[in-house]
Length: 64
Image (tube, rainbow, N blue to C red; front, side, top):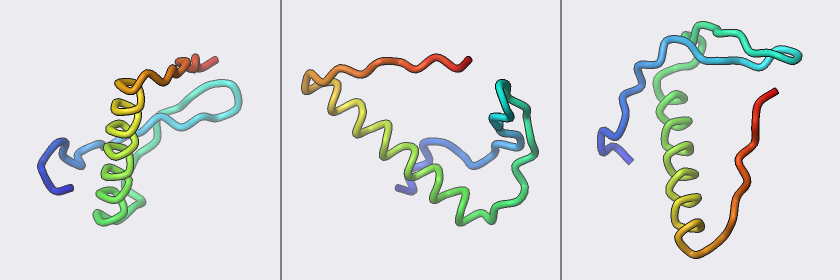
């Protein structure tokens, strides 16, 4: 994408462990992998948005 929609500046990410979540440092992945994850996330969000505009219904999942 490369449009500067969001910088890859996330330092910690929530990781599901058992029933809960814990924050872990996000320094394992190389920059190119972080960018690929960001691009896939934005592509998924755009697809979801366009499908919702077409009338598809999506249920929000609640984390327990």
